[in-house]
Length: 377
Image 1 (cartoon, rainbow, N blue to C red):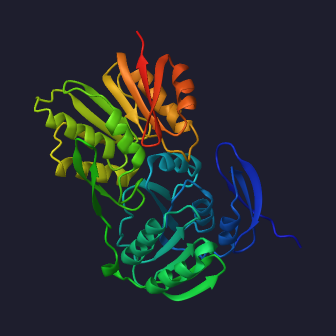
Image 2 (cartoon, rainbow, N blue to C red):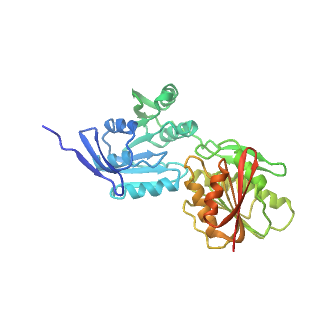
Image 3 (cartoon, one colour):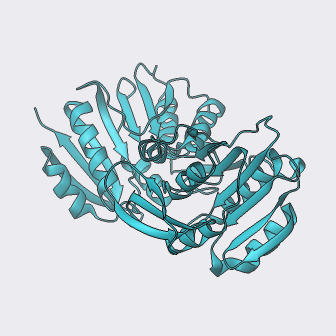
């Protein structure tokens, strides 16, 4: 007799998949991608009650949806670092009323008696961030709480040792680990890292944490951008995707060193909760009172409200984020304002910016392309 598959329907576009669940087959509709390791994890998910905490390092909705569908008495809390991931997950998990998606620098503790931790790590997950999330789970879950961890098989030795330090009765099932939280609250710290960023004319103190771009060291592309951007004390300056604040804070220090009264302001924007936390701390420590840091992933400033827009778009997204930066700059800049972008693909950036009416010049600095576009009008 064939067992009928349990249906899990996700809104929006995506394919239909059939996979093995912990109690029988599942049919998942509306899922864009089914990863082999996550399909394996689904078979080993425990029955859950109370709070189920799922720190995610991407925006895959599969595991939260399966947990919510198979455990109607559980409350699922998904914790992410990035607002973009939060928005995608909220949309995909909207039908599941007992699922909450939170964007925060750290997962939070709860007084709930029954709790379960589900941690999903992948090959691209930064090692320090993975260690941080493992330690955090062990700190905030009550001792004895079931924990299931999906971790990359290519570093199985590292993960086995690390998980063995924190979770009791550990079982290893390929790339899946099962155990019980030990409640080792003393083993987690925020892992703040302080370091200096220096150009030929400025130096600032920066702070970062795992999960923030260029953790523990100044990014060469950001330094190259800071060394080329031209700013004045009366200008409004916007940096998109600021990370820990490297470029924006170096520019703030340049304006401070002129000795002139700064009548403008610098707005730093990032979608990553930890990046915003780090940039705010850097602005405070460096005495940058005219710097504001905003947590936003779809920032839409008033038209013609900035003199300078700059950014160091990440390469992992192709040119999607670079195009978003250009779109924002086209709206935000005053006539004659300047857009500054650093990349390894200056010709592509110039072509994208030209499509929005920018006249672009590209130069080289520290091995990077620095593209400056002037807005017409």
